[in-house]
Amino acid sequence: MAGIYIHIPFCRSRCAYCDFFSTTREADIARYVDALCREIESRTSELPSPRIRTIYIGGGTPSLLPPKLLHDVLDTVYANYAVEADAEVTMEMNPDDVGEGGMADKVNRVSLGIQTFQDDILRTIRRRHDSATAIRAVKALQAAGFENISIDLIYGLPGQAMEQWDRDLVTAFSLGIQHLSAYALSYEPGTPLTRQRDAGHIHEAPEEMSVAMYERLCHYAHEAGFEHYEISNFALPHRRSRHNSSYWTGEPYLGFGPGAHSYDGDRIRRANRPNLDAYIAYWLSPSHQNTTTRPMSHDIVTTEHLTPSDLIDEAIMCGLRTAAGIDLPAFGRRFGQPCLDTLLRAAAPHIVAHRLLLLPENAKPHTHLRIAEPSWMVADDIMSDLMTS
Ligand code: SF4
Image 1 (tube, protein in one colour):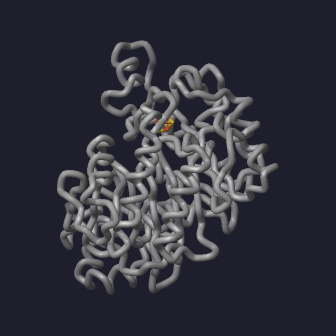
Image 2 (image 1 turned 135 degrees about the vertical axis):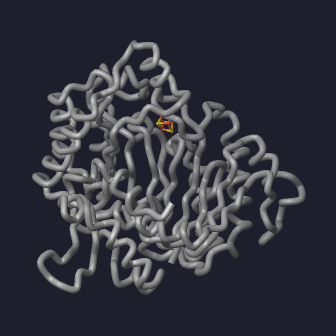
């Protein structure tokens, strides 16, 4: 089984904190979709299994795609891959695009980028929507029959008080959503928000504040009956993101579009270069019309061959991100007993300090190693102690 990620690198305007690969050149959308469909058709032989369990249309802003072009993209996927009848098909949307035109009937999950319900902060971070629009968007999706809605929130935003974060969480969980992804604001190099911080116009939230906000997030999510299944992700039972979960369990996936990544489920990762013009020129050049299985040029893709130590580190990182943790017997079978012993030796001080848990607790043999929920905020430090490089 495998997944497909489709990148739509267009945004109507750029949010102040964002460093994702996207452009505001909407005039290029139609040509881009042509190129994207060529790529989708041409890479069918790269997956070990043709069966597709999840499709994720992300961006950028996929909801900027006119309905006809969205249909073209999905029709191309369905015509060229064996998509399971009950596949999870997610599309990211901006709240102010909901209700603008139709959605493909194949989309059965929506991820809405809301970020906060505080209008003054939405303006600071240059989101296009306001709080009322975000709430209307969720209700419109529900009225349209969507039963699998995720929203994104950010905490540690400039000027965000704890009381405002509390209000965001109360509002979010009152909306009848099934899934929440919540991230601490990260000041990425080169973004307008980072420049404003460096110029002293806004201030980064102190670490204790971010930790306290994360604790509030966990608290409200538990109260609302959501499972905390990954560091930043919460879901009602049976509503976890199947697509994102497959990244953490090492399943193969194909990523289409500039900036998209692919993984063969074994040792090879590919990254499409984040260059829209080069991407369109490559896939629309006459030599790529009606061809399949042609190897991609190094001009638009880079390939990484993972070493044994890369694979061990990935297994540690991905396992520790999730509530399930690292499956120890499976880790031992894959990498050998000496490697498992090394992992457990490195984990010992964290186990003593209760940052890491061996499960099931008070029983042997332990089958899983996972980070205790209160320590997920310092997961990076714990992981780097356990990794080989
Ligand atoms: S809409 Fe999303 S991808 Fe586009 S600039 Fe804003 S955060 Fe970035």
